[in-house]
Length: 91
Length: 262
Figure (cartoon, one colour):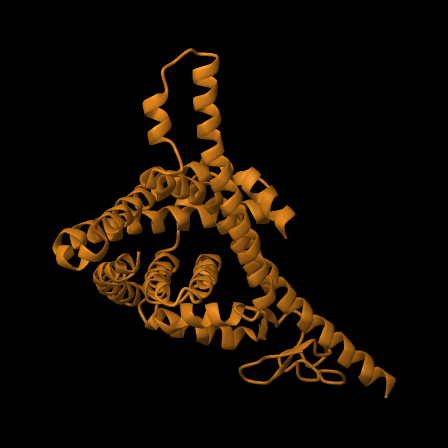
């Protein structure tokens, strides 16, 4: 974690810094810092990340992942038969 | 961690472990059917590819149902661990992103398992990765191929804990399996000794020399162990996440102290 001692909050200059935003590297106070997935972010970076996620269309992504999973499952059925036949031959 | 797992299972068991077992049983039984056919065919199995493939498709279809049940149960476990109370209908509301991510990772793990079966030594690895896949399911907030895999790799750093869990659950599976076989034998003995029933035919069917019975009891043991295994993986990921942020705080505190000392 970057050092924050003796630094002031980028948004509230009267407050001492509590953490450093891992995206923009700005020193931020306790009110401005949000811990997400174990990492501190400032409000603006967090908003930007959220928007980026929304733009990616989670529905399309989910459908793509589902289709890929179904293909894998289909391949899995064939692999199951081939592997099984190989192993059954050993016994 | 095992104590916490037992607590979570106790809280979430009714009705969520029931949902898990009900959705897993078709998959387990179809797997038994598949393996029984394979062992019956032996060397000839390669000549019955189409017949085996139809059962394999049924196994894969039942796997989708099992995945859904696991996802619901894992969500119920997470709620139970967080609140200490039995979760309500909210356990059914698995986020679509988390569900699709788990569907992908679980299918990939199954594929890995099938490939690893040939090596035998790779089976534990596939089982451990499978545990992490269900444990990290709800941490997925972005649909994609890489994010769920990245999460699994991140939590796979707890290799010692994962290996210990695998060892404990392998042992538990063996004990559950032996207990199930013993329970059937005891039941038969009681029926014959006190009920005066003719059990000669049943003794042949429910004996360890009957391959189908052995496979079915193995499926039963897996169904008994599964709720604990999923809960343990959910707790493992939850604890690892907390420790991660706790470590960061400790480091930060140490740095602050060092700054102050200067």
